[in-house]
Length: 369
Ligand code: SF4
Ligand code: SF4
Image (cartoon, rainbow, N blue to C red):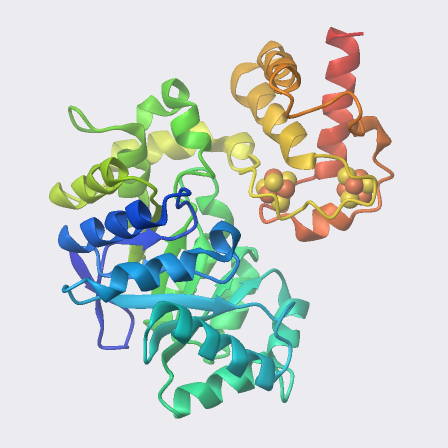
């Protein structure tokens, strides 16, 4: 394993971090997966309330009881749920209790979507203040934030000097969109943890398309995508969601080889990216507050295929989603979008959802009739 200093915190963290949002139903096995990761050198474990139907922190708690290796824990509080200092305090105590810990090493102001959201976090008597007080009392080591903002906004937040690190969505597909945030963190010397390195599964699901990422014999597409993140200057940890021991072993292997991306490969990635790949939907589902109940992520995922493989591939995918019952005849169609814009405000990739739903509808009408 390779370890890197997390900003100025004095902590050395593993370049591959464990994301606790993909555990399966068997909690004993899930705890075993966590311990295997620690045995192989992973010492950064990221969780949050509500991950895995709110079981993630409990699973980590189970694992930590019998985990002899040294480790650091990261968890979160959302201003949408905990908007006062007292509520944040309750959340911290609840997380500590669930994980059997005396202290949280990295506590995130969770999922800041834009600068208005950030203002809400910083409101006097609010979430940030509650977390800061908990830090002063020794319940938290470091106060950090997680975000889906665009790079410019991340830069603004970092430049306020109120956080010791940032967790941001970054991968081969969307990296130009968040690069300014990473650069700002590098300049300030704070830690950067990246989430969603596999584009919400998009990269391993399109192995053939993304096979150009690999650089060494036997490297998998997922390993290449993790290596891409880990090789960027300024990035400290690459979080990977892991649900099996095999996945842990595959991901740890990344740190057993040189973590570099050749100049030629970087150039190739960027030239293939263009505007299109930079704007793929990662199916994160953050946009799903549609008053019309449109299953936006499924249609936008289908639109990804129109971008990657053409319109026929998109139609095939939609038909398959219908066959397996993911999209039912009773579900609202893309044409039922009333263009209210609620989803676009929430989109982590800032995609033109309304325009894309219209395009999906047009293609469906053209191909299916
Ligand atoms: S713009 Fe359309 S898809 Fe988006 S939330 Fe509004 S109705 Fe739903
Ligand atoms: S449209 Fe945006 S918010 Fe919705 S699933 Fe895709 S990337 Fe996520």
